[in-house]
Length: 69
Image (cartoon, rainbow, N blue to C red; front, side):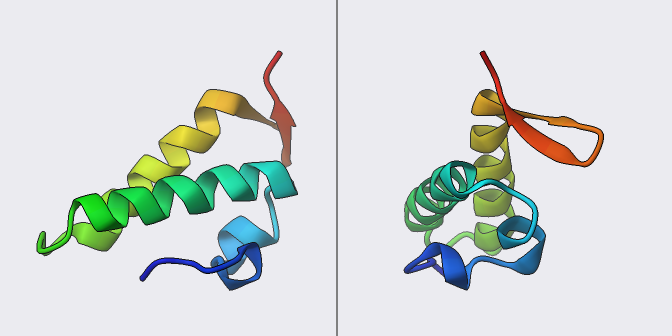
């Protein structure tokens, strides 16, 4: 299901990513979710695409997500 705001994101995203990374995740998830409508794996695909989008701009160092230079 698409997310209206960052507060609606799953705890695994909301509690661990900086707010800008949450914005990236939400936008990518919502776009991918709409693009893959009708696919039985719609939510899984959207989740994978959203994490890939976050990882293009952020990297995890220990337990902290840091913006890439």
